[in-house]
Image 1 (cartoon, rainbow over the protein chains, first blue to last red):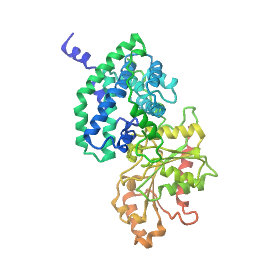
Image 2: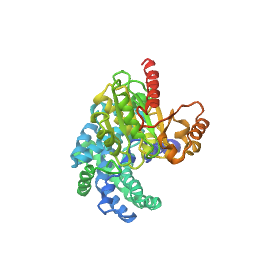
Image 3: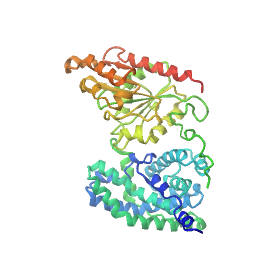
Image 4: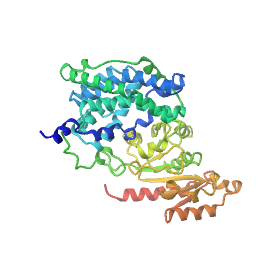
Length: 235
Length: 231
């Protein structure tokens, strides 16, 4: 094996990960705050320091679960079983609906950007939308990415969404918000690696090998937020 | 690795504007976008169009509010269409993103309406009030209307911008207010023509009886052209 092919094997599709994880990827994420709008209104996020704590909590809980589901989907675990597992790990009906809506929007974008039979099959079996993290994993695979890449995309998205939203909600200095994401990067990497381990275990052990961390306050906020008559973000 | 679909037609998966049919092969509804600055009368124009055309056409409306449901509720309160024909898309404080850079939520809304109350002849997609650069993606709508008003100042057409210069129809609304705000309609018409070349401009006063007529006539032309092309 030459050095060039060795390098290719180690990094088969790095640029595709940048495309997928780009906040401008047109799959609807811009209209969602990941719970940040409700947290801002409750006075729990008032600046960059609070935002960092909020993101740290989200990353360690729902971020880890989403990353593991995405990695498992990219690793070839049955997406319908993963979709059921995502339901079981999402106690809030409002968040289940949001996740399926975003999953459907991502499916629409992914089918145009990286067409694949796996996405077609999932779209046919879940016409109202599969969970976002499961679609994200299949999209990553269709883009030639591996389970760890899928986990990175999901983990990053679990914190980049709230950070962008808080810039709009609080007129937070965008440099400070991005610095929060940079400070969280090592933890994001760790969460992605843990998620990959769970995903590889799920290939033989089934979906019970996936983490089930939850964030009760995010669930309560989401239910409350869904009932607001006036809001900037869809969730 | 399966990339065997890559040479296909991506729009068949997205049913975005370039594709003229629905999944079942029938002609989809003509989609017209309405954009323009805050308060220029977009929602009033949509309401007037619905009242003028709902007797002859099957219509639905998608709104893109900044604060989610304000415009949709105006249309509901005024009962211009039954509630099941109006959907509000939430835009996360970025209405221009939802109609141009990331149209996925609006495409969902349009398709859900066609599924739920279709077949439809016409879907009006109203943008949230935005700036002079906000335009609709061609992946979302077939034609777009940009609505400005005389009270915003008669210099708006001269300033140009993508909305004023490139919209398929420019509507200059609230002409009844022109004398009160010192707006010169002749100047607006001349500047609009300079920016737009042969693209049409409609002057409207929605407080007048059938003040929407020039816009209604334009919509009928678009529909005739749309249905003249075989699917």
